[in-house]
Length: 106
Image (cartoon, one colour):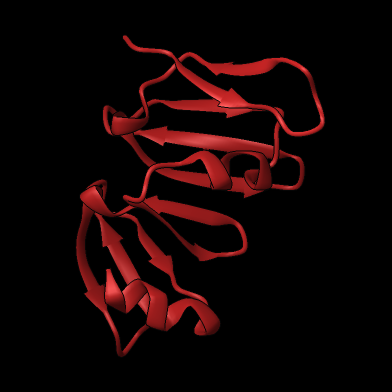
């Protein structure tokens, strides 16, 4: 398993994640915590917020609303009428109205 180094904001050290970002289906933020949902069904909880991870993620990650960033490699389909994205783990994620155009492009 490859670990991922994330530069931590406001700190002089690197934040090390024990996961490989290519296996991350989505990141869900709840307050000051972030849950990494992996393709094998497991999850990893981090005590950092989404704003720490968002600038350092690869281009395959798209923020769909305030509390969720998805990996577009794991998107099955996009339903424009209902404004939701279906992921490979059969979870439907609502897309924010203001982020709809950005999600449609990718």
